[in-house]
Amino acid sequence: MSRPASSPDDSNKAARVLKATVRFDRGRWLVSFSCLVQRTAQRPAHLKRVASTVGVDVGVKDLVVVATPQGDEVMRVRAPKEFRHASRKLRALQRKAARQQGRWDATTRARREPSAGWLRTQQIIAKQHVRVADLRRDRLHKLTTVLAQSFDVIGTETLAVKNMMASGGAHKKGLNRSIGDAGLGEFSRQLDYKTTWYNSLRVQADRWYPSSKTCSGCGCVKTKLSLAERLYVCDNNDCGLQIDRDLNAAINLARYAQAEQSACSDNGGADRKTTAPAALVAAKPESSNGSASPQGEAA
Ligand SMILES: [Zn+2]
Image: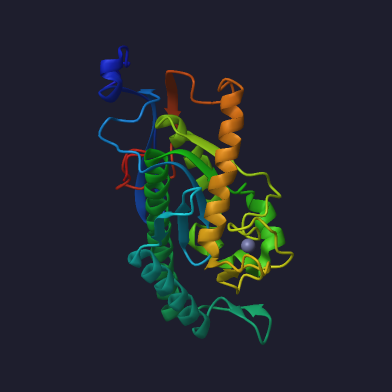
């Protein structure tokens, strides 16, 4: 069990378990392992690259759109049905609890004895929270794995979570809910280490790069684009492009990544972070549950 991986052949067969932590959380026992695994920074041969350079737009409404610099949409991923159902059920439960007699009496502004019904609902809510979190984690892992495996160069926005929450407000609500309140940083983190695993490259666009406001047809930039506008309509009369908003952003990010990438190649590829032949990766323990699959191999 604790045999260290020594030769490349062993890379998929041995892992050193450094630590195991057992804890009890919200009605379930959880075990997380901290393991040291030797991995080669190479993509397994059976995984086919779908496209070389792409842009990934993480949009509102549970949507992730992937496009090539040439303007082809190669992937469009919605949150799975179970996830949407589970979130909807959670919100319904929370509304139900609000109608029951809880611990706080708003009229007298004082604590009170909650009803048995309210306590029961709270238990169900706690369970549902765990379910939604599990589904979200599962989805995030599958998504980042597929992205890192399928493409050579992946352009994304700079996913500065705090910044987005602060300046976005209602604007990114849908996104905060689907990828998760803390999940955007997690999306970013996973994409980083998985692109190292699968020997692909991640390019984050400059923080101020207007991926949504730029026209992928003619390159002119809108001053304003409300989130309600799902269709991008170019203001330039000579262009007049009408395109799905998220696809437009993904195309722009793909072109950004392509430009960055060719700039890197001109440097002799010195900036490529994947030049190391093998990466020794200490997988961080996750706030995992009993059914968690090995990190990154969920898809
Ligand atoms: Zn245009």
